[in-house]
Amino acid sequence: MADAQQSRQCRWTRRGWREADARRPSRGQAAGGFHELAQRASPDAADGEVRFLPQFYGGSEYCFSFWFPQVNLGSRMKFKMIAKVPLLAWGGIMAGSLWMIGSCSAQTAATLTIEAGHAAGNVSPMHYGLMTEEINYCYDGGLYGELIRNRAFLDDPKEPAHWSAVSGATLSLDAKHPLNETITTSLRLDSPSASAAAPAGLANSGYWGIPVKPATRYHARFFAKAAPGTSGPVTVSIQSDDGATVFAVADGPTLTSEWHSYNVTLTTGQDVKPSTKARLALTLKKPGTVWFSIVSLFPPTWKDRPNGLRPDLMQMMVDLKPSFLRFPGGNYLEGDTVETRFEWKKTLGSISGRAGHPGPWGYRSTDGMGLMEFLLWCEDMGAEPVLGLYAGYSLKGAFVKPGKDLEPFLEEALEEIEYGLRLAGIHA
Image (cartoon, rainbow, N blue to C red; front, side, top):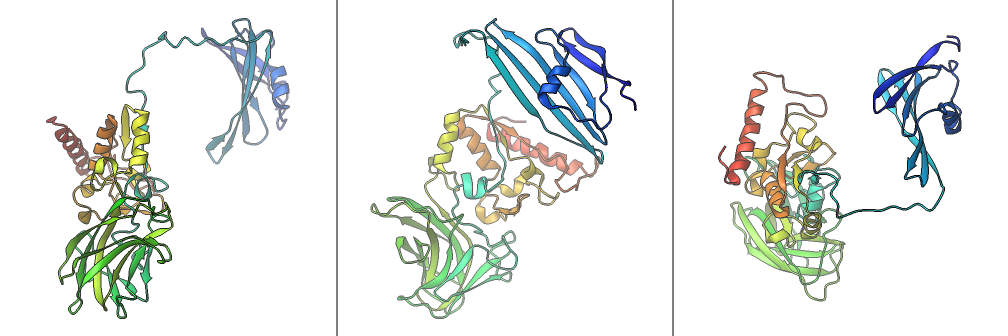
């Protein structure tokens, strides 16, 4: 179209929108940057007035320019800001970016006065709070105190990911010896050459190394059962990643041929130097075969709670004094599919009943950070819980049809709300 064709320029003032005419640049003509943009803005604009100037370019590109004329701040400083937002319409999708430039010229020295004792308006006490999401190992490997990675041997269906053999032992996944109906795979350890001089077993380096501190108590827990002919205890130790240095060690109770839970306390010495280059090792001093499940190691936790949270990170968040915590996440709540959403009922109870689920960020969640842990997190910070509920839509497009198909999910959400209210002593 010819240059003479007109577009519209819109001016925004406190009285609302007004329209005026402005020329449309030639098709394909590029803008001359902020200087040219400032020149295009009419010099008769009143202070504080904002003009919205559509500029049309060749092809599918459009440029929306915002011009902020000079604003007088107490007759001491003048500030001019120009913003340019190019939007690309490509296949029906709009993508934009914003550039801003500011210039000011001080007629005299500027003075900024803050009246902190004068309230200009009321702000809701619930205005400031926290939102959490399981991303980049925020829960597992982060706030959640568990130090063992892949404690249930479910991260990889083909091999015991993040576990390694010690002194010639053989490790393999075994679905024929599950711990229970929830934890359906165990780890089989074969150590035909184990001895007191050369114990054999398995080791885990946790999330980028087990952190070791001096004079610190660690709580280890594992489920195990022995094959016929295998006897003796399992030795549990925190050692350097090459096994050369032992920071803490203790023997568990004698093994049996049935699944049992074993608890061991490990305490580091006063002279231990802090390090993250450590691992947890479970070894045998005699030849034999043992099955393991749910191998766990916790350092001291916030308020010494079992299955608790890291005290250093909790203290920082408590000091923030948030008024609310929104949980359990966004994408984490939805899951990639309906089946891999956050199912709150499966996150309750003992960790031996929590199989976890694949998360949307490429790794598996243990569900150690379950609904109860989130509620305790809120309680410890003095924050109100803001509960995210699954609404039937997942990240990769799967969804639950409205109507009868959605009713079970609505019921699940109502039960979750009622569960939280009853814990707080409120009867729904």
